[in-house]
Image (cartoon, rainbow, N blue to C red; front, side, top):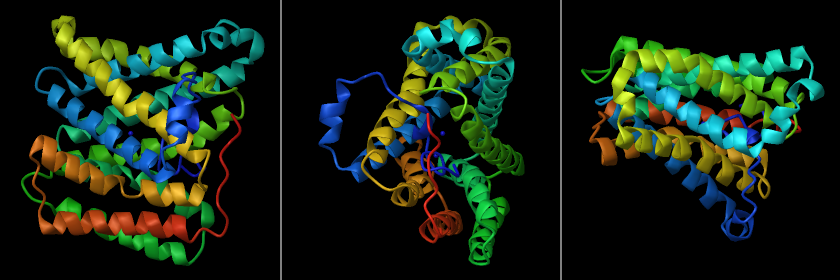
Length: 313
């Protein structure tokens, strides 16, 4: 679920330093734009699978299982760093990572609540206001006022909506956008304090722990269904592990600015995935709104005076 840095403005890769070295040679032969597109499709198919699970479980339970999958994968990958956590880091460092985990949990919980009430393409479009806002506020150029107005116009069109768009859903999507904005700020702070993705491992564990009682409380014995657990694990892989890996490899061979521009198509991909996999038909006004937000994202990225740099990890 894509930050003001190269790997966060519109993507997720800034945090995943995969240990799957065997993938590197094969991925290295794939053009970077193809990797980005595959990552975007992976994320949105994961979101589509998650939405299909809402009929069998609660959105909060799906969030819990997604975060738990990430926590297990990253926990295993960075187990040595986690064992030496207190020796290598101060309580302040750990507190920043923990706050990052709370933000991660809140952002995903709000997004899945929005997804339960909105078509996939619309939920993703509104959520994209988070990284777009950070990018615009960070630059403070007059031209960015145009992008802000375009994005505002797009959300206004969506809020007027139809029977498939509820104000409650838009409100949850806006909360998810705010969560993404805080995620951006905390990701940089955590990245400066932790090596690799060990900070994200801590954050994922905290996020999963926070969502555990909520998920269990809302889903109950449904969580004992092996098929449900298997599909939920697939959501975690499709929404986190796979796109992180693909985007990180792409970022090794392309500029941050081009990365941001390519990631700006994610709302449109989400709308197509929603149409194909979920049967979610959008009206012309909603497609126009998505187009306005994409234009704002591309403009804010394309006309940056200098490409933002990714934090060292």
